[in-house]
Length: 213
Image (cartoon, rainbow, N blue to C red; front, side, top):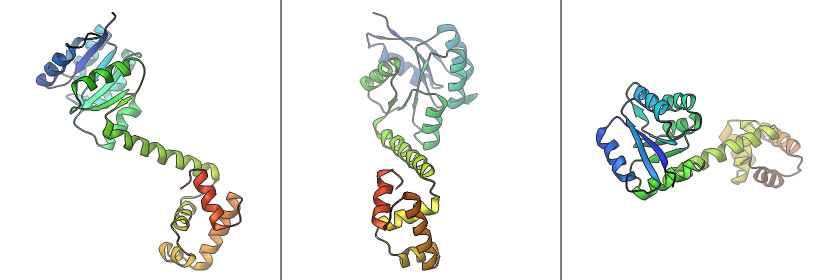
């Protein structure tokens, strides 16, 4: 059986030893090396050509995000899994946009870690369960933004549609946006024209179908 070759990169010896011990029990996974710094990670990757690199997001010398890009330059086929205690949006989306194939929290169960390595090796993406909703939410927001631009709507027009969908009257919309009711009526008329509908209800329905709100 060909084993998945794994390099573990973390500046804490206890973490490296623990991960090595966990993965040693998996018949299809082999830890081929460890690294405690960004420079060492690059050297070991060049030397060992691992299939998967398990990488902490905070490393001496440079951030894990910088290391991702450098690792890809050295070994384009390598799969990188971030294993960290930090789950901020900055770290999560920064890692994924930099080319990481997985983002896992250090609280992950042993077998789940092994399965994540297997899935990433096969070309899949892996996230800790509690992070999935945030990524999907970001994707949904992006999709709505793209749809809004395609429809030619401004942010203000989209906000008006949301207020209409919430049941707001023209007077309430005017108060919310600090406009006159005449201005609100004109803006709504423009929205109806752009969406090719004739009523507020149709506008909301069309906006929902297109994912604008």
